[in-house]
Length: 447
Ligand SMILES: [Zn+2]
Figure 1 (cartoon, rainbow, N blue to C red):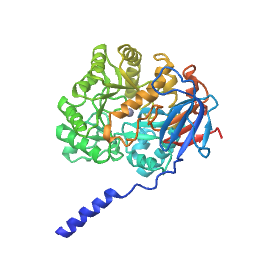
Figure 2 (cartoon, protein in one colour):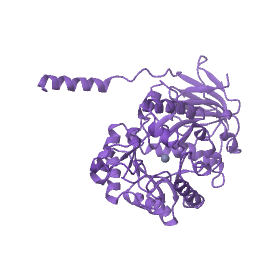
Figure 3 (cartoon, helix red, strand yellow):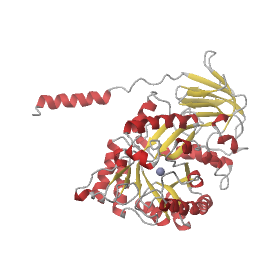
Figure 4 (tube, rainbow, N blue to C red):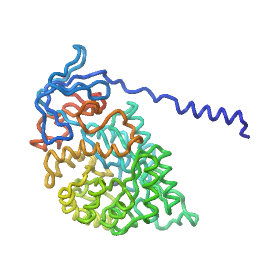
């Protein structure tokens, strides 16, 4: 029986839990002075003249040729290299590192082990921040933020919300539906890749559940998918009321909802429902592009995903949908540029770590559409602006990411070369002599 006393002690222990300090933080050097560098700040068209950058704690303190520090402060002589923000990939699935069948049947601890390895590999490719758009990664994100494992900063939505027969419904056709005694949870739900919710009430509950798990933003499948089992690309997933339920709940949590949509009609229904960011967008028309720009909606785009072979284990229907989406990409990116849309950059790779190892190609593959400076801004300052939409739900409250300016997080690459003049230097992490996140150098070949 719950007596007053046990109730009170329960309250006290939950209060105590809430104040337990996080596990020991990683040792961060108090300061580092990086001298003799030319800065790409994540916002400009070009590089600065030679200057110095003083890092104090996790943040950038000063950028000036006169910036100096006490003699005992560690120094890195940039030797004329380019200092730029660490890269951000705004569409990843850190948890998904196997073929679909292996992933769905693997133990969760094995899946987590592969994800940890992928987190370190991602950081060592120069990506100091990633936005995870589906997958149980929040525990790993916490461990990384606490300095227990190396990895990027992670903004995450936890599970994407999808409808029965929509993207994310990977139940075999042979099982009974949930409402008729079938399993209440799919393999993908167990791994928090997606959660299936039908009707306004369930969508609302699913949205709140993501916040219970610590999500920073919400993602909803509002259109057909390349990799779905049952949903053709052409359908609008969810009714306007269901979409709006998720969007409004995200707003009540002072953050935002992102939608997955390829077809124009799905993009349109997502914009109408108030989504602040649309993932993919490949088949948008000028009308919806105009509307997206008018409403300030972000387009979270991928190029490399459509230039690589369909992931192993995907069927001919999925391959056909990938081709359809790929065929729309060129026109969509031209439109987005012409209309001045807010363009975020991401990869959306799932499957093998070999595929994910091509992550840096996302920059160099964009040269048919964008200038080198535009691509570098997309991967840094622009992507960082999208992170600000998470407001108080973002775990990174001390400053902006994706820019080099006083007060920003000291997430920094020292690049051996001038990526504004020659973007190909961004194609290999071998050209990154220093990879720093939050003032801590995870790689430094200039010793
Ligand atoms: Zn995705």
